[in-house]
Length: 273
Image 1 (cartoon, one colour):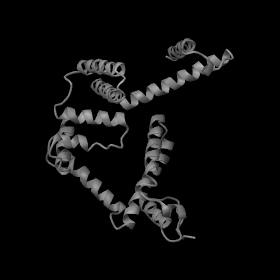
Image 2 (cartoon, helix red, strand yellow; image 1 turned 90 degrees about the vertical axis):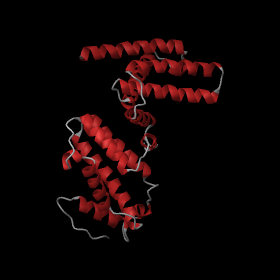
Image 3 (cartoon, helix red, strand yellow; image 1 turned 120 degrees about the horizontal axis):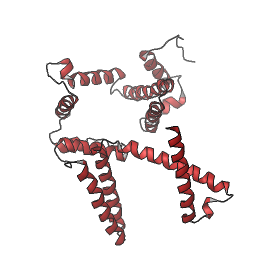
């Protein structure tokens, strides 16, 4: 049994020490076996759960989930400390220095009265501190592990800062039609490889249009997915009420039920408004 003083309130130093004990001799066998790679997905999962708490506007849940995210950070730091690389304190030191360097309008003599000026300074300092000599470097530095829509929107935004962008939202929207026409040609030719490429181009053009219209593409798709699930649920309820099985119905009949479900949901929204 590992000895540790029980307290009414704990701080970050306690969390660091507890993780150290869990990973140490006499600690937890599971915790001791973990590596960066084995708990990689846990970091993603905990971050997503924190986002869910934000979406739900649940402060109690957010407090809990942020704690789980913090635990992941401390755990990964402990693995590195055991390898003689860096400590949690080094992570804190680095991020503090980064914040000070990238806010010269707060901690220095640079003047920046608007958000646009702040972002312009931020980008310039970031390129300098990261040794990015070309605009391309800012694009390639966008993490490949990001969700595809989120990464596409971020890449498009950075290209915009380099002057490579559509002149207006209308041009971005017109590009969707152009990419759709190219997809149609690939489908007509039954060119599987080209079809995949053109679908990717079509999705990318949709992301650019969303960016120009001030829409978060990731959130827009998330909302549409939730809308689909809700309509699907109501459609299934309508089909079941008629003692039928969705799988046994042709798509033409399912479309009729789908339209009914859409009407019901829209009526509920109107009544709530």
